[in-house]
Image (tube, rainbow, N blue to C red; front, side):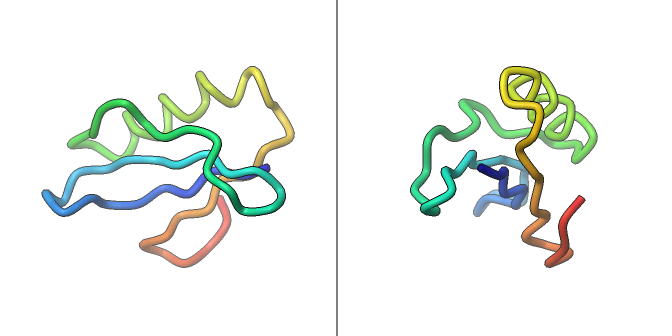
Length: 63
């Protein structure tokens, strides 16, 4: 399982949590103007799945 961190059409940050088969499990319910706030939101969700990785779609790299 992993997260994808990306910018939406308004240029704000969002995330999608995906299963090992790449199907979306859940998405952020809001957008974030600051990348750090989006990552904080991921970490809150991640506490329930501590082994999940985060992929930054803008930087094309794993965090």
